[in-house]
Image (cartoon, rainbow over all chains, first blue to last red; front, side, top):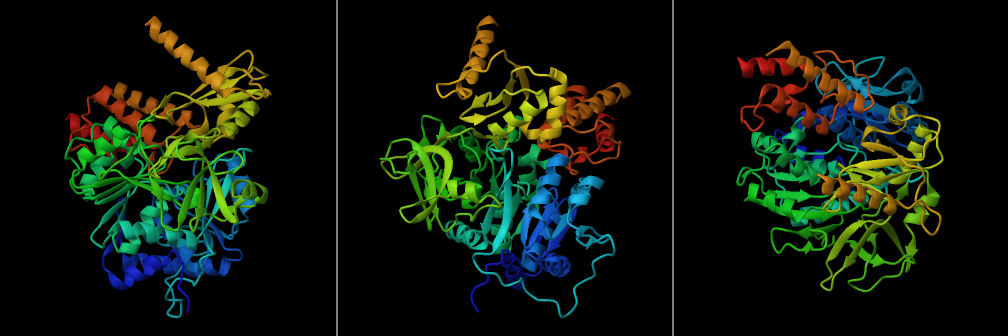
Length: 523
Length: 83
């Protein structure tokens, strides 16, 4: 029999090796590998008969149910699809119609989304929290404990089986569903476990929602090692240092803005996080200052920066920082380093040709970790995953260069895709919403202000149409998820245009800069 | 604690819900953060309000942030720390 690429294999293997080790701690709920596996088998048994194409939605906050739902979907041989809890009703309905899910798993936060209209568009089979801890029920009945003849291991799947579909913001206003095969996940885990000795005594932290693929790293590296995953609740995210101390966390992966949060709430004193031994950052540029502050707080930990888009499975370049850390000086950020084994990176020009070292261009990626493409969007997939020199590449849209030593450096977004508080946002999508909300033809959003190359907010400009200011924000909230609604919405008499007749976002940013320096001079 | 101060915390929470496009109604025993209604940015705002209104010391190692998930919990916390 060939190897099983099922992502739930980690649970099965660690259950065999350490059945009574703790696998998962979420709030007051604690599961050993034995009890986690029992709950997963129980739900998987109910999911299996529902599967046709295999897609199962999971609408859940940071909960044990989210983890059980993911593992049970995989165990049954399905593909899990995280659903953003903050999606407005219309977006949810559209998403359900596109995905034609076989089933939906909700925890108590996810259950709140099920208005009568949403439920009409949702799949017929919905699994909700059951009476017992970690158990589920359908509308008809509680799901019983598995029978003796239930499959003892996770369904056998090959490397091309889709492990999950993660949705990211899309340019046409349509979110893109990145389809990630199990073989890509396996390749990622192989690279990480060769570099880092995650072991059964480790206590890892889940710092991400399941809609963000860093959560896949946290879950799978932990369960593969037979270690314990401690889930941070939203309130814990505010004072992460406290959480690390309270649970004696040893391994950590988060976005760098969590560190900013920790510093803001006064929780990052030198030597205050002695339990940590592996700290990784990913998802946005890592300011050198942030890496240094974390290193001082966690003197026993290595601090490394990893980089990669969801389309290349979690991360695929790595820059060790503690030992021989390299920075991208013009940005004050840690470099993104070199490709993982099995991955290649290049800097290409607009024609897909590799540029010389030191020259700036777009970061392109190829290799075992590439996603299959975007769900239901073959044209977009062909555009973003072109074949160059007989090899399939992913064009990241990130700007960067490779230095003479072969180290890659990240310079920001090539287009107008930005990261705001860990969310990936296409400014064009906000434009679109703002146009609808203001009932105008012309609107444009810019990232503002910026700090260390990272967006800290969004300002939306619009040429006044039918609707007045207060009502624009109100209607925009019905169109866009909260993290995409601009902090400031500003009317403008005419939109600045560039030579191609396109809205000139740089001119808008310049306007804000001017205003800023003007007010600074006045004060 | 005065009822006026609790009223201002209630208003802070209502404002944060409104900014996130949600109804401003919430029950005193309703989960605000674990339920996903409010995010961590909102939590910072609530914490800052507690600091300003009640002088809660956020860096105090005994201050347990997981105890502000509902208004009832906030009241209990403040009752305990201000008595």
